[in-house]
Length: 403
Image 1 (cartoon, rainbow, N blue to C red):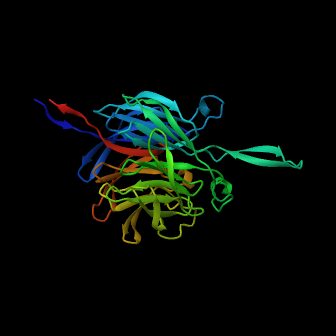
Image 2: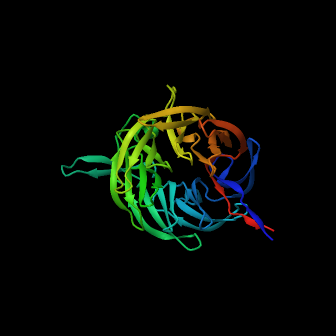
Image 3: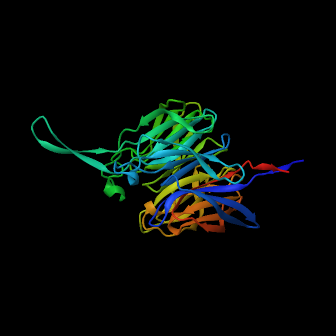
């Protein structure tokens, strides 16, 4: 006679390539021990080399990962950007490669999953590099112009086994922000071209929202095998909307504005796809003395509490939106970073919202925190070494019945 199924809790941690590490994905088992968590590495796969964003499909038992690279045409070190599909062992999270698809557009940074339709979407950032092109005008003057990488949003069809079955649509972003601007990124040219940095699906499943930090716009598409642009919101010059997250209990959308160091609250019309900004607030408590660029934003599974990691202040802060007021309630300190690009950049809740895990890249750690359900306060609850940890996601495995 079988007993109830044991459903293990695991984390998948994506790492970048470092001086002594080779990227890939680490699987951590998670066991609760009173007020703390025991985080134990149980397996590792060497792909992707630059393992950024990861997303799990519970229906197909698969994990998808981006390889944040750009081909330079000069061999394995410059291999093309790609998306990888893995089968997930239901008992321990061990990963087995299903297949890999080269993605059109360098540096894929984010994934969205429409499990019901069998679609996966990647937001491909594009690089900051430029190519100088010399041309001659009609009056005979020689001038230099600049071309930049394309930033794209790519739709993939999933096969019955969860493998990547092909690409159904590619949207090439257009436009630019202020160039030059006041940002230190890319010598003031971080907005010389589009940079799609996130893609999320609204709670109804009808729309895909893309944060384009290069053009200061959030674009809204009707979701399907082909994307249809239905709305775009200009968030203001030099805001740079980076990551987006919906509150699961409301129609509110939260967005980190990377260059203006703000958290914005937006109202989303689920019938039309139209966005309206309600309010915004600084993500830091006061002057940092250096550039601060917020990265990830997550809403607690129960709604109401919103979390943002700051790169510069090097903190993980939490907020509550009450009426017209967005208030920062507190923060925990993270490892000091050399600059925002090397700071902590990802965190995730367990499915119940009891704990939060953060990939603290400068420290080479995955940190665990217990979440106070009333105040949202974070309390250290464990840690484990994972070199160059860049992204983390936490899932409950289906497991198998014990006999």
